[in-house]
Image (cartoon, rainbow, N blue to C red):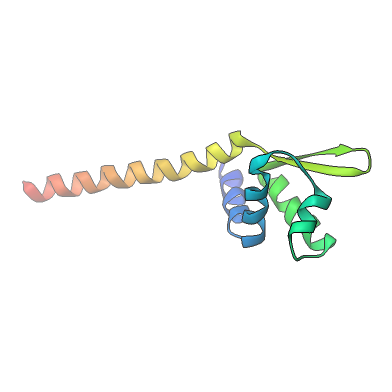
Length: 104
């Protein structure tokens, strides 16, 4: 995952509304109108959040007639998770080196 994509994915995840939208999409594709019904935001605000989520690669959109439908992109979510797993593994390795150095 390239650095800009990493940053945009975590930026997208850092907002409560966007995180809620991701959770709403767990059950499958949703129309923008259904997302809007469940959130207490305006349509322009929803468009703003959806743009950030789409640009981050975490969700994808498709037009169905006059409706926009959204769904999760699991590959992108897995990539964001792998970034965090890599950080955890590097920290564990670093801590192991520190501990082994202390014993010498």
